[in-house]
Length: 85
Picture (cartoon, one colour):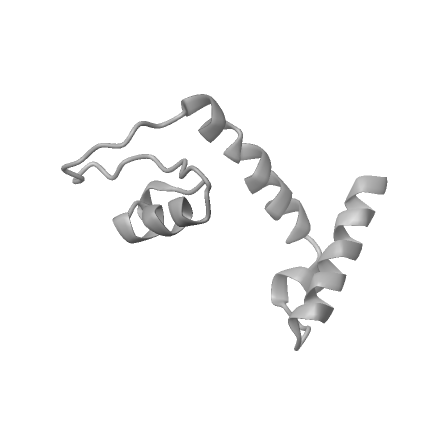
């Protein structure tokens, strides 16, 4: 799921190569229109809200951690704290 700004053939092909379906609204200037599952795209709101809540944790938002492994641990802890609340 992505916003209209990410509507490109290259991205759509990369998603298809992984066996997934791209849920991206068509850019208004696009000549070839692709179908859009509006119900599934509406679920994108849940993902955006989750990222917003995770970014309330200063350490997650500013990415203090040097390695991807440590950053993943911080995001996991933040997600656990949100889930417990």
